[in-house]
Length: 98
Image 1 (cartoon, one colour):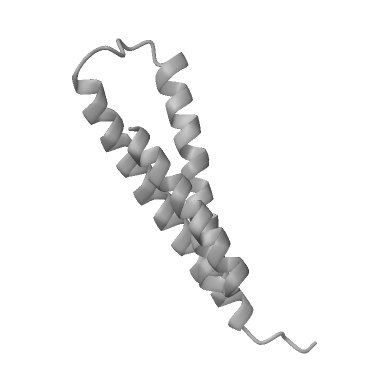
Image 2 (cartoon, one colour; image 1 turned 180 degrees about the horizontal axis):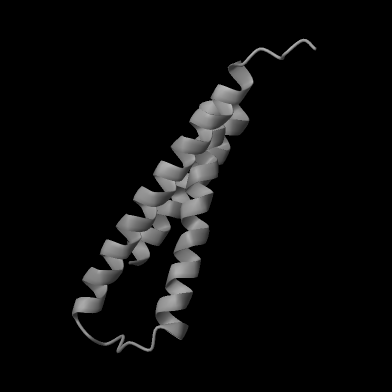
């Protein structure tokens, strides 16, 4: 689980460096999505550790946590791509002349 967290931190740091070196909308949206995943990871792990009430020593919890993290990444990816598409659709429309 810590490897997953470290890889998300690495992606956030890499995308921030890429954005500083070569600013572009695609890299900005990648950083945004990676930060959403990182924040979601902290919320998810806090819920698992402190609010779930489950036996954390159970061996199947690691697999369930990996699966939940995969769902989190997929959901945040879909949300980020949808936001990118919607923002591109709004900016490509010509302003109406009254």
